[in-house]
Amino acid sequence: MNWLNALSLWIVPMLLLTVIVHAALKKIPAYDSFVEGGKDGFQLAVSLIPYLVGMMVAISVFRESGAMELLLDAVEPVLVLIGVPADIVPLALIRPISGTGALGMMSDLIAEHGPDSFIGRLASTMQGSTDTTLYVLTIYFGAAGIKSIGDALKVGLFADAVGVAASILIVTLLFL
Figure 1: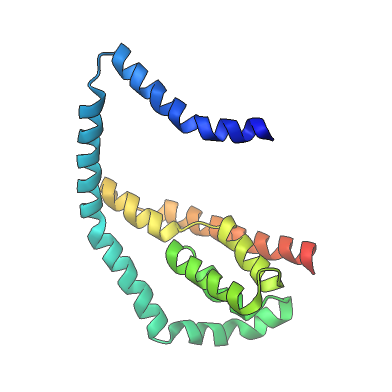
Figure 2: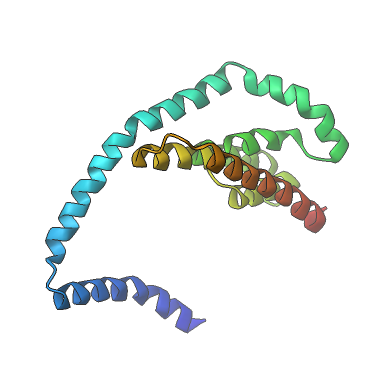
């Protein structure tokens, strides 16, 4: 395992050295290219602000309006029948929208139930098995100017649903 630690310490410096050597061999001004890329990255970040604000407002309205509680009350009887704790539903719903919001919810679940509890393990597995689909589509498609996201949205949300179902199944099989 010592070789793995040594490799992890040297991989980033070696990658940087490789880029610098390649730029020198190709006579590319590496620093100027780096600065130009930084400018472009900053401009992109500024252009994404409206999409981020829109997403954060939508999340806040959904949570603060009471819609989350109404949805939980509606699905709780079904969840009880299949053995899924209702506490996990908000995480499953928020995860495709906001990684930070989902991380906060997961932290709250772990603080309340413990990291080794069924809910703690399920929340951790779900966090790692799903993605922030709506966030990714909003940000990246918005930055690229793509207006039609229908198929990507369907596939992304289907993948999230599979991740949630697989998390529930695997954690139930392994830890119950």
